[in-house]
Image 1 (cartoon, rainbow, N blue to C red):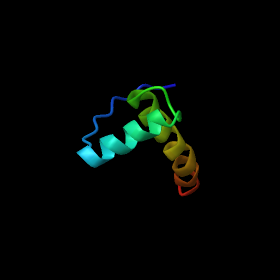
Image 2: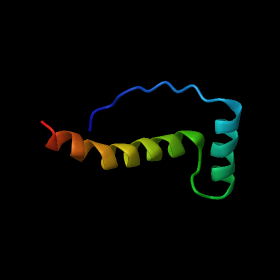
Image 3: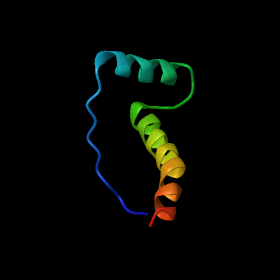
Length: 53
């Protein structure tokens, strides 16, 4: 698996939503939650992009 650095800029509301999600037990940390979101996004979007080639 390739490694790519991603830099996010989140506003206060977005950070609060992430923190609330962690408090609800959906993830262990902000890092883990962002990685999960990116994996799910890629899984949903990348196969469709491959078909367009």
